[in-house]
Length: 305
Image (cartoon, rainbow, N blue to C red; front, top):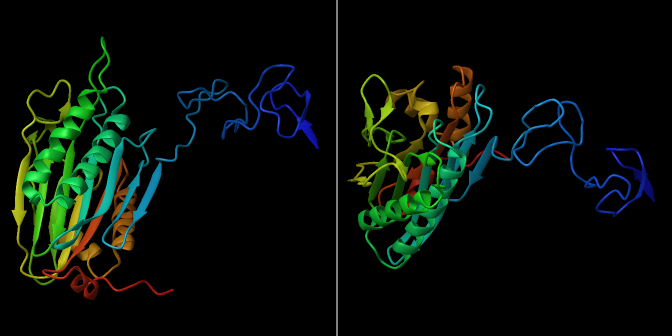
């Protein structure tokens, strides 16, 4: 079987990696806008300049203990947010672990900073918790390691990649959150009230960050808080792409409660998009029932198949 090289039209055999006539890499997808086989390593078409879709434009993660959705939004050319989720096995039972990081757009490679921080932190939290470390100590260690990983991304002669950070560890009868920057954690209670669990590291009224992860951040001192809910509900982690539109816990609770975690995250992202989608949007939903994790399923029934 044979075909034509998309660059020069020369006959090529199926399975060949390169065109013998022009050297074009075969099997490489063309530009989604103009079709030209000239997409550079930076993701932009060298013919028309269009940025190609990325696998990070819209990401959904669903575990038994949590779910998350991250979306590029309607105005940004790329998704600079990142999230990571896991279920950490401990002597006391399974703990849900979630991390959300928001890349600082004015820094270079913010999407790399956020993904590096999220992946590093969730791995560190799972390891620490599995070894018997208490959630507050594990959270501080995870932030330290995430901060070091982001610092390591900086290249000589350029500004430092940077991101914000928020995490949650939910299990037993408590929720422990840690944060640096203005990504937020909420408690959305089912009959027990709702509240913001974090306080923004930002100048009031300007949203100018006063703390972040990055080589130019100085000493990173995370805020850590342990919260004991008095009933079932949701731990919600999000970037400012959501809370800039819906900052009030009651508004978030009205959407997030009585839905599966994934459906709740999808609905909240959709609301932010409908409100304008000016920023990247990331939402992580962790169902929580004091005591046995299974108690939370009363609040979050399974979707009909």
